[in-house]
Length: 337
Image (cartoon, rainbow, N blue to C red; front, side, top):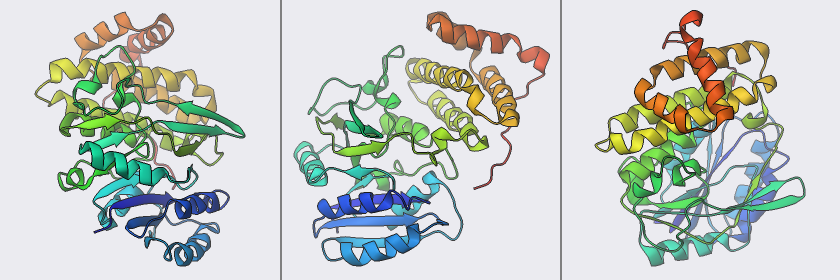
């Protein structure tokens, strides 16, 4: 069994894949496994991966898996999880990269702490600028309860730092069904995943370690594209609300879930100009439907405690629900892959 499996989906990242692959080479060990998933790329990415496999196979174990159709990041990660053999697992994205020796430090920390998973800081790379982004949990190097780290509801907590690649996970979580993503989600795929992980895993720790370089502002990234795939955040947070409502501690955890959902809706409404006109209209309609589906008494409490800018935006949308004849069945238009 490999000590660590690194799952890396690639889709049309010919400009960035060489940097990522070089960084894997700089982190390689004979007992590390690199699972490269080509999500039906249409550019030169497949050829780049073919050449990389030959090189990486000299220093680590390598698996190359290809999709016949583009399935999106969540589906590609699931393909990688199904192929991975490691005792520990982590994720990377095809347009990011690693500092030399980062994976070795990650595995060392996991073995010393013995917990279900660890979370790390990361470095945000925007052009030539570099900024360290810290995990919001302040206690470092201690084994903690993931469930307790969901709260408090009115502060940024561990579930708001949803990046799957900022950490590593013991295989027992995969065996328990806690590491797969909701298939087909095109954006916000990390949100139901991080909530489930924190509700159901037994132990975690936060490390003072930042070896992942997250490339921000990539033109092909869905965060930069205002099409219908962005609206999958509605589906993602509906899942968070539904699953958290069924939890034995729903009364304690649901206010955080509703508050986060509201904050994300307000964020997207605040950037509505970037969306194509039909998608912007659908965003308003779907957001109103989402607000209607939320527990209304709890929603009122959340809006009463949010800042005025966001709460006013959401209250206006809430007042328009009846006149707009919004129904919970409103769904986003189908997007091309």
